[in-house]
Length: 151
Image (cartoon, rainbow, N blue to C red):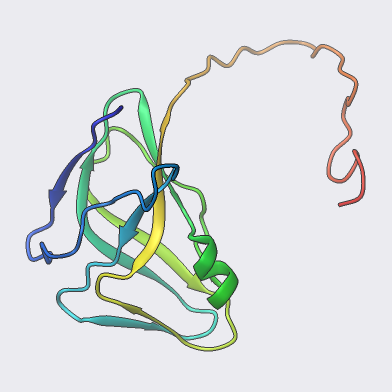
């Protein structure tokens, strides 16, 4: 178990639940919109907006938080996160906002307290990048986009 310390932003509605897991098997904790100052945000078709959560996080060194879309919002309403998965580095302490985009057929309303995304806590493995003159061979080789089959 990893502990993420959470600080509410000044003016954030404390009645909005902290991130939480909907089921015992959930990998992602739901994030909610904290729109205490305005109540709702309406996104026109094709529009994107930064939705505030009213939170700041303290993530332990060696971990990151990934922000991912909610599948139900994507399927039912065309709501996506254009930079998914978004990464929050362990050393960031600023406000947590979620970039939400409406790819649906019409306007979409984000209401105060709505679940807008999910966050996954993941360990970070850092690499050392070594310049070389050649790479080893592999069965796939340089085969790229679509080279292993249809799609």
